[in-house]
Length: 185
Image (cartoon, rainbow, N blue to C red; front, side):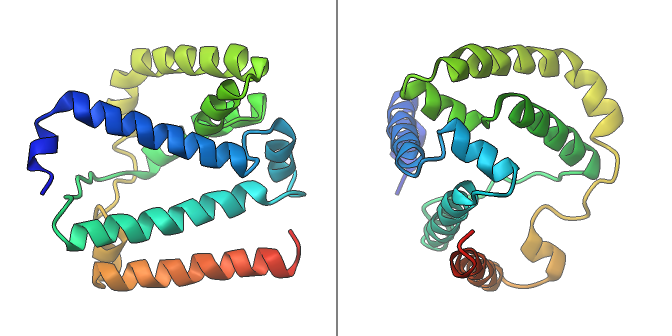
């Protein structure tokens, strides 16, 4: 169904831009582009960010697996490792802790005119990307090979069909949202 789309890079970029604008709009309307909301999440006093992101993951998970079951998309996964997860988590966490924004919320905050997101976030992303690119050969050869995961996906790891794992994860995430609402977190 999407074979024609795969050959038209400019159309793909256009749809990517539209989806990005839509996602940014949802982040902004959900309040997660606000510095105080993000700091509240980091201090565990405001769980708005978790609620919005878990909701987005539920919708995305169901959507991508429906498209996969209809043959509209293919998964292109790769084997991860503990080393790459640690490096990624440290880089992401450091930026998040220093600025109070993650990359997605930086873009949304810039869109609503937050100067700190523009000067700190956008410039930080560019500098951080350059530093990572510079050190990538070392990271790739020495760190990515630490604790390589035996499989690429969770269904492969636990030997269950993808739709069962998706269903169970959706139930767990809805449970998390329910608990957050019951305890007014």
